[in-house]
Length: 176
Image (tube, rainbow, N blue to C red; front, side, top):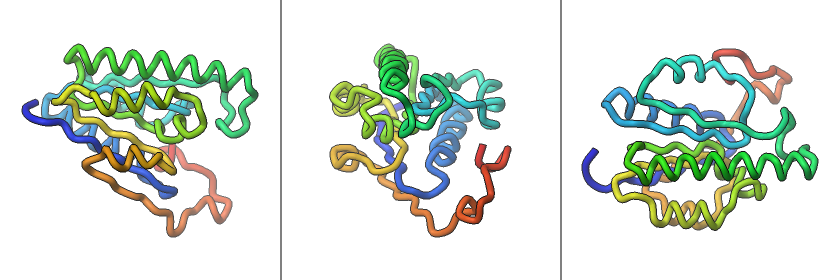
């Protein structure tokens, strides 16, 4: 990859932030770029992981403590999740700095940061001093102003209507 890598921010309360990020990841891998995806606040199996596992130029790093949503975690689960997220972020930063990553997707890092489950200062320092060629994507709800300010692409994905409001749970292959 040549030139300056850009920073993308996909945020909002609508469906499609991760989908947009993963679509970009697949496009990048299809062009020969090395892609690293770190999923924060997620550890349940999802359908897209089956496809991503088959792509040799995409590495997925994920995990958190337990199955609970972050807002219902115990303090112990939050601390354990923060340790896991810190290790995952460090692994991704190391890959990016070593040149083994052209596109880095930090999926749901916005929420993890807002909930104190990832070190915001470490993340902000990395974003502000990322390798020049690295393309970086961050996703989540309610980003800090510094995230909006540093991004080159800012896309707000707003929910207008969603089947969950009618009691329809997430469906395999569509939402999970």
